[in-house]
Length: 249
Length: 254
Image 1 (cartoon, one colour):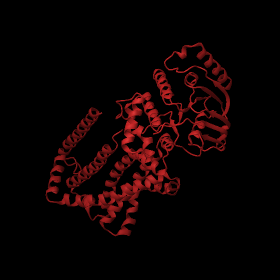
Image 2 (cartoon, rainbow over the protein chains, first blue to last red):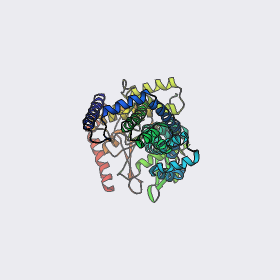
Image 3 (cartoon, chains in turn blue, red):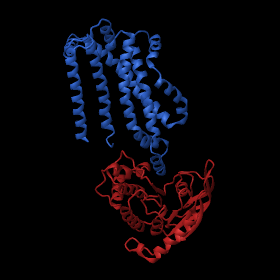
Image 4 (spheres, chains in turn purple, green):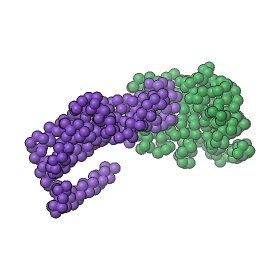
């Protein structure tokens, strides 16, 4: 398995490096201002990092990400467990969760602005809204997918509701919960950028709007690259937690 | 734990339906204390349903089941179940799986560990304590399932097609081990199976259920002497005659 993983990793690196190489060559032809050479973007990224622009924007963004994703993860898992285990809760919430999961949530950001004002709280709320539902649905699916015969087996040995929950449903749902958190983390980064772009006040999203409007394309790409790195790291962090927790797979 | 006394199972007028489907109708059956009974019948005859009602996993619609002097209204401490699909916790090692019943019954950790280790050794899996189910073959997984059932020292062992998904050679060795374990520590056993040879080889008596709705169709005594595990019982004319008798009964039910 290890060997296969590193092979996939190597293929990924080759793909990324060759794409960047192609882009660099295309950029050197100066066909369009929207295709700046990768090296120019790297220089801009280094400059923005040096003068504090990037770190200031990123720290504001990451704080909103944490403030939104933390509660979304905790509440999402709790609601998902309840919906998975109790039919009444599921019947009550299923419609809402499905509707909001498929809804274009960016459309709700103005409501959040009206609610909280133009503040970074809106960003945290957007992060929450983007990541919450996918965590709920995955957790619920995990609980509902629990092997029936494991439940019967535990009941034969006298397990009551609390023991079933702790010893069967929870561990059985864990892989699905971790997948939900991983998808949720990626959604959270999306929510972060969307929220910041719409309030145009703080964070990396504000920088995206600013550099886009002022046609500072290399700087724009430098910020986009930073967002991609954050999304990747967030997903990797959850994946690492997954590997530590779900060792039996 | 104290050596368990042997208890009979009495099924009186039990009926069970799932919606409009009548699974069991007026089942009357007595399994003697320490008897090994096989339940056989075409698929859909309700043999697994009957086993689950005895285990207390399914409520009956009518009639009564008693295990020893307890009327079954839910799972009880005297029964263990071996499941067709093993029902092992995939996230737990063999050791933890075998400890699971003891854990749910509140046995302290140290006692749990040593009891489980002994049970694992008894089913021939010593050395595999730390293996996860996915690392074990089907036969070995079911041995873990049997060890878990035996670890709580039950008076009644209920087995739901335990060898159905195990290959033939492994199955024969496993059946012999089961008979050996049963003769060392007698229990009242009800085995659900769809194999005629298995039903006769293991049991004192075979109960044939008829399908849709499930009724007790016929009972067949198995007068083969014990121990059977070391002798070539399967090669005897008497064994062949019993299998043939059972086949004649079952053929009419198809």
